[in-house]
Length: 195
Image 1 (cartoon, rainbow, N blue to C red):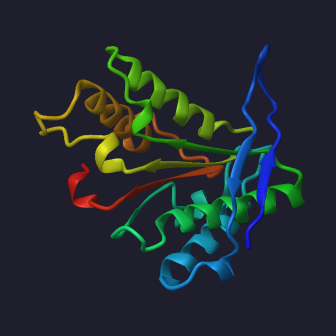
Image 2 (tube, rainbow, N blue to C red):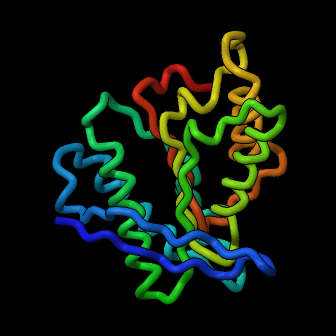
């Protein structure tokens, strides 16, 4: 049985405080099946802990092989959420032992706004929070096929197109800098619907 863990927030900017993270973490032995994804996730959790806060760089980025973004796909009930809980739990445990700050954020369909520009702004805030070089970060985008839209999809909302643009710029744009202190996982039942 898993326990609920709470991470206390820390000062991000004067007068701002992060909300405490309350999440059910899973241990690797609680993830049944899909051993390939399980062991890749365990390797990623260890790899991210090699981040050097003084240099603001992870040697695995310099050597190659660091996983900055990944997509988890599968039918409902195949363990995508359990995998998220396991990765977050492992990284959180390692950070507690090392005395590092840990930032976890999820971006979901509830952050799509009907106000022009607000969806993209929400997405940028999510990315900036996870990219914070003072912490180890893990960001997830649940149901990426519903949150972001194909650029060619004329039936998608303006908010979905804004989010797609922000994600593409953040993950593979000209301004993208991968330091190795964080990773982003996108999860979907229909990954073929994502650009």
